[in-house]
Image (tube, rainbow, N blue to C red; front, side, top):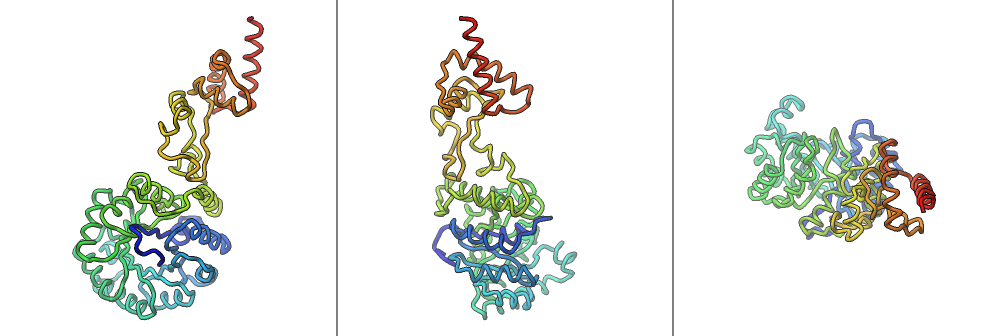
Amino acid sequence: MKDRDKKVLLVDTTLRDGEQTAGVVFARTEKLRIARMLDEIGVDQIEAGIPAMGGDEKEAVKAIAHAGLEASIMAWNRAVISDIDASIECGVDAVAISISVSDIHIFHKLRMTRQQVLDAMTQAVVYAAQHGLYISVNAEDASRADPAFLLEFAMAAKGAGANRLRYCDTVGLLDPLTMYDRVKTLREQTGLDIETHTHNDFGMATANTLAGVQAGARYVGVTVNGLGERAGNAALEEVVMALKHIYGIDLGVKTTRFREISEYVARASGREIPPSKPIVGANTFAHESGIHADGVLKNPKTYEVFPPEEVGLQRQIIIGKHSGKHALKAKFLEYGINLTDEEAAAMLPAVRAAAVNLKRPLFDKELVYIYEDAKRDMSAHK
């Protein structure tokens, strides 16, 4: 993997865990395009899919592995030798070997014993190591595992030749304080590199990822738009921007392309970007409230931590029920009209009334009609 000296490395699993979102399917051309875009913006490792599925999935992974990308290309596997053979056939340089470590999964899903889990994982890791692959051992449902068994599992993985441990909060039930403690303890006990893999069932995937980084995790599992099973995963764009602006950790990612890649993944997955989506949502840099719009017009930093252009967006001044005259004047400057204070004040009641009646902000033509009516009224009263 490139730049392994970096403090934090991005592992994007949009093409694997993201596609496991119920009802989402990527065409092979879409998978390749997404992989190229992730590579171009600076993602360190791309989890491309599951070769053991065969068919189009295997061919897509093979195409990505042979696309000449700078990023490491990882394939996901069960702790099964035939799965790893399928990954080797695709030409990937890294494998994720995944098996459950919580008793509820071991006994009820796998119908195995703890020892059988250890044996299967160890055999798979040894086999992958013999073939010169970079190995992430995925501790599925680690957040519900017995800590003593998880430590035993991690040490067995390390002894067999694993390069890192993926700590999976599979059902998204951790909070940041607990995540910090768990990752810190594992790092200290094992010396292994840790990857956080968080789910958003309680809305804490990004926060838990950041807590993991603070605790010493060097790898972060993310997806574009937070796409993923159930409530999704930690969002690539949220994690990157939070690391940069909250913790001062700049990963060198081309963030100006975030909106572009978010839109592409949204279309390919059939999952629209909510207007309120952090970082890339249409409302992230939209201002309507008079006090807010006035502040942003005077100095954008009053209500924006970073400029919209940094993530491929543009600032929007929305004219609606809560707008003030400064926003109205700024909006009309876009039309080449320099409103006077008197004209803006005369227009505001009509603007607010129209927004209430329509239950939405006003379109440009509607604003111009109100302006023309206000001008006529003002002329008539002179």
